Image (tube, rainbow, N blue to C red; front, side):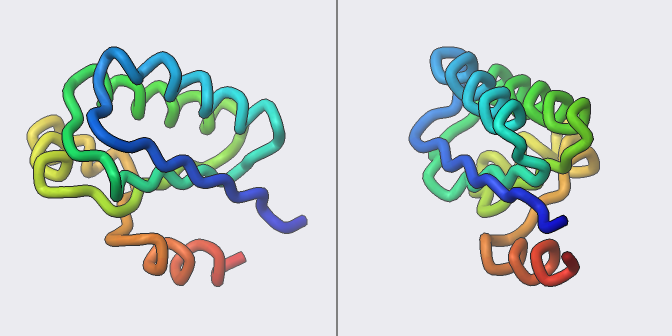
Length: 108
């Protein structure tokens, strides 16, 4: 069975005001059968702890449903936040969508 890959691409600032909407979007994808979720952060200019919390909850939601979650295209600020919180060890992060496609989709 081929994997159902869904891509979420938030934009702007990922903080408390957008976190709820983001979590709901992830839940909807999982409920609709997505088993691989890629979060493309290319258009995210800034993320705070609420945004990071939303990503952690998204990871838990996807894993609880037996799926996998990946992240790609993070900027320097988000990269620094991930490193300071050791989240770069929790999430599988790819440089961009092409790197994700080559690593994940070609493996399936």
